[in-house]
Image (cartoon, rainbow, N blue to C red; front, side):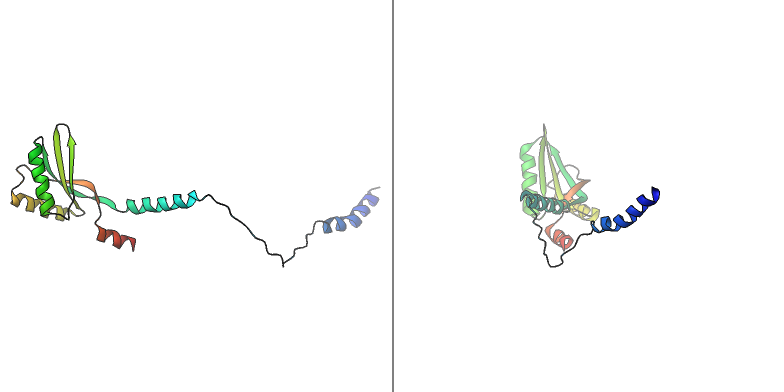
Length: 148
């Protein structure tokens, strides 16, 4: 009985294996269509913009110029800084009851010290001027160098 089953498997097995073969036609061109949500393009562009903005801010220094509750004096100092140093940023904030003014976007400590000396020589600010570490915005010419 075992010989008959073995003979039967030996004669039928090759035909079963041939049944598994698939003939491939090489002349047929297959086309794949990808459907995607158009919001993905907007998301990708937003991500690029965020990454570019992130490179605009670096660790640097600002001058802490003024902390006062005298609004007129604070506005006088602010207008002086804006008129005499138009290239530098002046940040004025109010935390009750004080007005605080920070000045500049300096990447190097030496640059901040130079401006500190200029402001002290001008005499417009009666108190002390402090160099404080802060996150500063890069100047446009530095941003262009980084992007290239």
